[in-house]
Amino acid sequence: MFWAIPPKLCSIETAGSARGLINALGNLGGFCGPYAVGVLTQHVSAAAGVYSLAITLAVAGLLALTLPKRCED
Image (cartoon, rainbow, N blue to C red):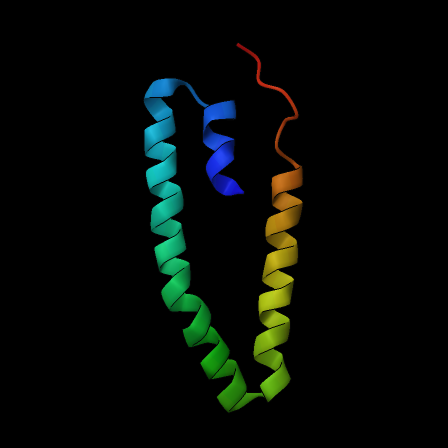
């Protein structure tokens, strides 16, 4: 869903850079997410890793809701 946001909020010139940033953060999350779940599972409990991912997803959804509904030209 995040790939549809840059063309709505950014100019054509900056939308490509915004998509690159989304891709970079996705790759970073692909490493940090499993690593954090493994650390939490090992040191806290098996449920702690899953709960941390659920909380992170909820925070990301709330941040997406704070974006403007329409773009101002």
